[in-house]
Image (cartoon, rainbow, N blue to C red; front, side):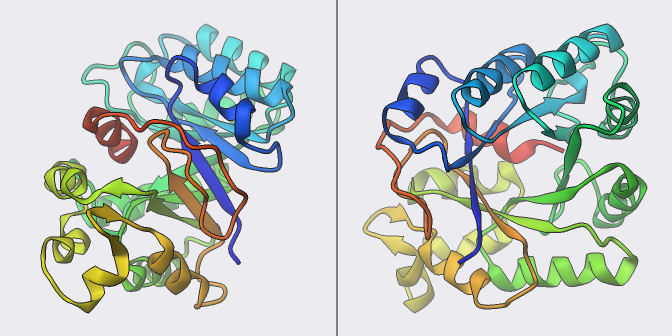
Length: 276
């Protein structure tokens, strides 16, 4: 089975929920949403890392106010044993400071950490609301010398993910690709957010009846199991599964049993899917 990492949101009480039932063998990533701020992301990641988890905090370029703040974030991460981050542009409308996109942030992370912190970057199999497809691929080419892997936006089609990986290989992007997969989420919530998130084309079939929809739905909920099995069936295409949990910590496909925790609202899905 493909390795799985679970993305969580640094909401109130999440550290306690994780430690109550999630084994330390579970790799976690901590997202960065504009209303939470990057400091809360890093603080949550550091707490979990000190408890023995492998944790990857998200650093949103447009939410970092200065290079001094960046060095503080890196220092706190490294002190807690964090050796990897995930770098995005972020959803903030106006940059808080020196960084307006992921590339200059990646450059400074490499410089300030002395290469000791690896960095993942985002990829978009179905495009991005603010980037055309060509620009997204060119951005990955520009970043790949500073990055360790690519994580895709949330997607619901294994063929689309495989085609995207093949495209990256054709243009010279050789980084490992982790497939972004939604956890168990109510179908109506996913459909309502599809256009906003930018993954509408692979999600449209969920609103229809038919064998493919039945494979991926359990009652009124989306189940990632079918998609994960499809991705796992094509060896070598993707490196692993990046599971967008939305803090609903049900069992991970092919992974450890996680404790159940209440899910969160649509705004959090928007934040997780729009990172760029």
